[in-house]
Image (cartoon, rainbow, N blue to C red; front, top):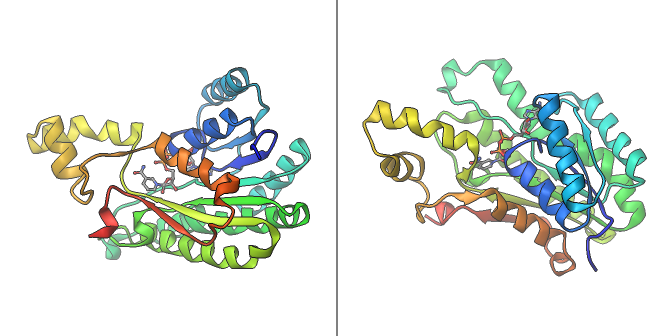
Length: 261
Ligand code: NAD
């Protein structure tokens, strides 16, 4: 069965992986709600481009994923606007890097709220409808850091390990309701955010672009290549398909071999 006319919410979808997932869903005929920060003009242009290109409905909700009441209201608004919420991609996330003794407690709280607790709040609100309709797909963007750690990323690694545990738990809870719950764990994904770091690193380390990519950014990634946002989105589309109906509670690595080492 195709995904056409299914209804989706992708958190953190104004850029990067989330936007690629929203576009890939729209390409399958899914109505999509975007969420995330950005300039209103840019968000509107992304939103209207999706509607024009894929002939689906695309709406936007600016809920702050660190605010439980806003998250619950967003899920409610999507169900009202679309009549259902069938596919939930929990993707919003931020990073902060610091030795633990200098790690600001408010940054810890913010990362746990956005990268982990927000998924609990969306799932909690979306589950009754999915159970009642006996179909649903919940996909969490985790990370290689849901399986292994790196120093100085205490909050991020804790949140990502947490999201892998949440995925397993809800997968078990919803197993008999036609609702699958999985996470995708990318390694280093090529996003504008990564691209912007390259010129500065070239200067400070006196390296070529290729050296920065291989020796700085991709040290942990055996393939020495970035994952692309389109590859993550394609995995999400597969997880939404009927072929993936028996995949639940899984953590799908897409990290060029990082976590095999
Ligand atoms: P990104 O910065 O391009 O996108 C993050 C999105 O989250 C944006 O739309 C942003 O507006 C939104 N966001 C941030 N704080 C928010 C808040 N409080 N409320 C609502 N939206 C908020 O980053 P990305 O690389 O696309 O990351 C997306 C997800 O993928 C994150 O969960 C990240 O941890 C994960 N991830 C990224 C990589 C990578 O290398 N880029 C690797 C593994 C996992």
